Length: 260
Image (cartoon, rainbow, N blue to C red; front, side, top):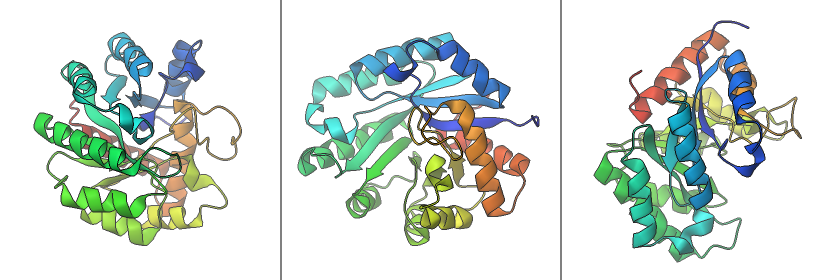
């Protein structure tokens, strides 16, 4: 393999899908030049597992915690205090994933409340947010636009909109992260969005164990697969894999305020 440095900006190796093989997953990722990853918690069990991983793999695994929109009804002062406990530890660098999701049946007002409160929490701690959107792009955009997110930083995770939406989120100062979805045959609009995303605002991710890139779709995804999405994106943008790896690595470090 070429000597690249790749940063998987969104993965869930703290999920039960990786109960038995985290050391091997880390080893395989590093063999494919994926040297750092942002791992996101989404409930109490995954948060605890994430805390262990951040301590076990310092400088490789970075943590983000947040209340996923599916679980918005659970968000209260106690939940926020739990997030604070994690976010004050070394290696925890973002609030997420948070956002809006109309695919599931989580009540809209509960989602809005949890989303806005967590944006405020991130701003108070001067931490970036990692945003989830599914079937709710207009409402998600409106909330982000009204919350002055530019100062602390924001990542749109697994961006799945078209070029017009890409420009709108970019205008808010966001970074757009592309997952294996961009490699799918039915994702032409997402590919066009990636093509117009500036080199200083693009990130790459797996969302493992989900969204495995082509030609491995159907298999469990893992951080090593970031390599294949990166190579696809580089070709789409007309740059070398090395150039895109360098850009996405630097961008991820910048938005997450990581200096090493």
